[in-house]
Image (cartoon, rainbow, N blue to C red):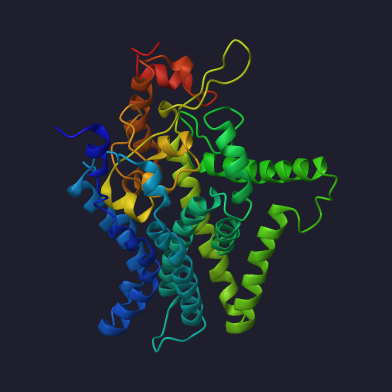
Length: 388
């Protein structure tokens, strides 16, 4: 009978080389053009959207959740430099796809594009931008300055550089509390949440940086401000692309940025929907636990999102690298992967029908323990009379 350390050492990451699929997602921009060029069918400009919101949810449903056990030695897994290839390679692929898209919008590519075609391409580029925010999320949590700089570069495409500040120093501190703009409430629609989260997160990031710089007696109106220097990267990027390809690309660049932000905030919406940390007698909130994040362990979405769906472990161990994040059985589980849940979220009545009873079940029917949207209690009690 082998001893425990020997047994643990036999664990192997079955997804080790599969992680390299992550950096190929920006390739759906080039794939769209290639399919149109080969077939002459303009509908292929929407290939990125079909793959992301059609094929991935279907494959997640067919393959189902991952059955792999947790790794025995997390430290050696985290220290393995191989896994950094996936996140580091994503950025050059991201920017090559963006440059290629600008060339197409500006009239290159040996095909004629209608407004509808360009919208399809914009949706694909915006999807890449949304996934890039997730890559930035992984990089931004690390201590190394080089990876933190790469995080800002990944965020430049969507003009969402303040996420670098707010997510790390705001959201992770205040998650699942009324003070966190990125934690959605029970009964809150996706669209109301996005407005609240975008504005609240921007204000929070600016406040956090202003306070940090005030403590060291530095002006907030300088490039020491992490919000300003991150935004400056976006301005420089857009100026370079407009000078290179013409101002004709600017509306499409702005459009893809909006789509990328929409995708990010939709993921924020489903990650903590209706979940609340309770206040302790001393006035502080309880410690972040697995029960304060929704989890999903579907294989396909986890690969392309660098284990973002293992969200409970991420909040418990924010510095842990994606490959070492573990599934938490005690966390509330989403009924599908993020691609599926995003489709549900864009239809609020369907989302509430699926998710409201799950939130109530997580709190044993006690509405007072949930993160309740003001004015929603009466409607909730009418629909679920057993709730207390």
